[in-house]
Each structure stands twice: as structure tokens, then as C-alpha cells.
Image 1 (cartoon, chains in turn purple, blue):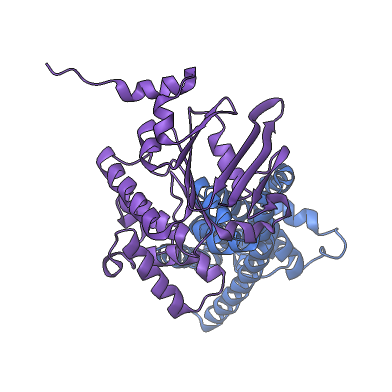
Image 2 (cartoon, one colour):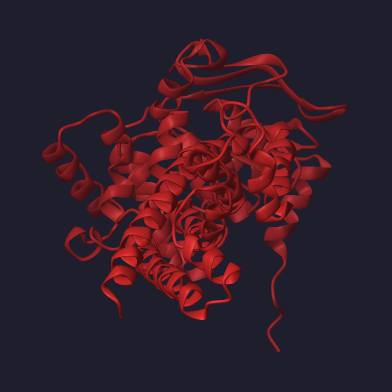
Length: 248
Length: 204
């Protein structure tokens, strides 16, 4: 197996505050690595270092063996799909134009973009005939998030980054989206890095879980190992699973 | 109405329109790029906004007067009047351009950058289309104001409908004042309605 993304002792500092400290971690081809942690644990910062939205203040992050600082900034970003909780669809573009944006920036021909958009919308469970011409304001939260995923997949990126993508939708829709995510992973075999603070989501989606605490890697484990793991932070997250409502 | 007066109204109306159109074209050409610039360079913001602000706080008649002795842009006539009108129109366009661009949803901007848009693509494909309505609103305010202010151009020999108004005031002739004020008001109303229509059309 080869590392698609590699953190080498990567740190990020704002002033005197260490957001991320000496993160060393490899993401292998085809796996879904979940960065799990509380708010402020540095997981989003780590994610943004992969596509060059942020650069490490010490150490380095390698994508396909090349440090992000040595990549052409635009090329790097176009190779990496990015999905965020707020989605950030362009409100003045139709669904089809939103999804086809990166291919269009890459100067694909119109018929090829059109075909690609139809395929992608199908893959995320939206009927192209029904949705392609709509604007983001005419979609539900779950539908918007599907469009966001389709957009991230558009130019066949080698890595996908997800920053709490399903955090703002209702739990029923979230489960749908999570299942869709797993189906897509089986179908496409993409490498993904997925940030969440939801331990159930981490266990459901991860090949491996990287648990972050105060900017440091606390634990790197498969979901099965994670459930058995010791350490205060791992136990704190395990405890979130145990709590059940007592039947009256 | 006597045919001489009708002819003069037509002629001065055209002159007035020319003053307004040239001034607005220049003001847009200066203030929109300057407004974009200050979204990129926050340090320049207080200086450019401050300048435009000061220009607008100078009473308009005084601004026209101040420019007369200034070399190159000053003197008596249309050129000085246009310079004054441009200075006067800067603020609403500058400010609305800045506000419109800075008002673009941070998540939209972040995804544009993360999708590998260049700075120029971000500006022209995302920020400007989304700011268009606000920028146009600034242009609309500036245009309507300029149509009124342009009547003062006559005070420094700039021509336009103000010629009637100043002549009417000097000779206490209400007909003359109305001959200037009514067409000016009609132009202002038409411009307001037209640009308002464009604003709605553009952004739907």
C-alpha cells in the first residue's frame, strides 16, 4: 500500500497557540481515515493542510509524495475534492453548473461535462432530469449536501476531504447520507479523509480512526480496536455510545 | 410654450444628460476597481473610503468652486464640472462594491478557493455576480444624486439644465426655474426606475 497523503511532524501555530503539534500520519490509497476529536482538537486544521488552504508552520504534508508547499496551489486543489458542512454551493449557479465547475475550470468540452454531471448526480442519488436545472435555494439540506459531494467528485480527484459534512442535517437524512457515502466508497474506492466529532459516524465510516486531542494524535486505530482502546480521551468517546434511555 | 424655450430645454437636457453619463462612466470606472482593491488590501480601506467620504461632505457648490483654480482639471467649463461630479459620485459606488464583495458567504468563498479557482476566477465568477445587486444599488444612488447635483455645473459654466435654474433665480422668473427643475426631476425618476428594473432583472 502506498501513502496518498502523509503528515510528517506537521505543526500549526497561530501566534503562541499550538493548534496542531507534530502530527505524523499516513493515509493509504483507498482508505477512509476519520479524524475524530472534540471542537478545537485541530482536526479541521489538519484537513485544510492537505489541500493547501493552510500550510504547516513546522514539518510538512505530502500529497502523492510531494510536499504541499512544492505543489502549484491551484493544481493541488483541483486534484482534491472538498466537502464542508456549510456546503458552499454557488447560489447563482444551477446544480449542473455547480457540479460541473471543476471540469469546466479544467476546460473539458461541454458534452463531456454534461455527461459527467448526469453520472455524478445519479451516483449521489439525485435524478439529473429533476435536479440539474434547479438552484441551490430550491433544494433541501440533504439534497444540497449530495450536490456538494457530487461537486467534489467531479474531476475524479485522487483524494476527498470531508469536514463534518453531515453535521447540519437531521439524523434521518444524516443516516441516508452516511449510507450513500459507504456505497460510493465501495463503488469508487476513493481515498478520503473525514473530519467528525460524532463517534458513531467515525465507527460507521472509518477504515481507521485518528483520535486528536489538543492538537496531538492520541490514538490511531481501526474501529474495532478503537472500541477496546484505553486512554481517557478514547474512553470519553466510547462513553458517548453507552448511554441509553431506560425504558419506563 | 414658445418654440425658443422648447428648443433650449431640449438642448440643455441633452447637455445635462451628457454631463451625467460621462461623469457616471468615469465614476464607475474609478470606484468599482477601487472597491475591489480595498477588499484585497484592508490597509487601504480607511484611506480610500475616507477620501470618498470627505469629497461627499464638501457642499457641492463649494466643491465646484474649489476646483476652478486647480491646474489641469480646473478652470471654467464642462471639464471642471465633470471632475466635481465624479468626485461626488465615488462614495456610494466604492462602498457598495466593497460591501457587496465582502458580503459573499464565507463558505462559498472557501469552496471556490478549495476547488482551485484562481483569484481572478473567484472575483469574476463568484464575487462579482453575487455582489452585482449591491453594486448596482450604489450606482443607482450615485446616478440619481448626480442628476440633481449636475444642475450646479451651470454655476461654473458647465452648462446643463442648471442654466435655467440660475437664470430663473437671478431674474426671479419661476418659469425659467421650472424649465430646469422639471426635466431634471424627470430624468432622475426615469434613471431611478430604469436602474431599479435592471437591478431586479440582473439578479433573478
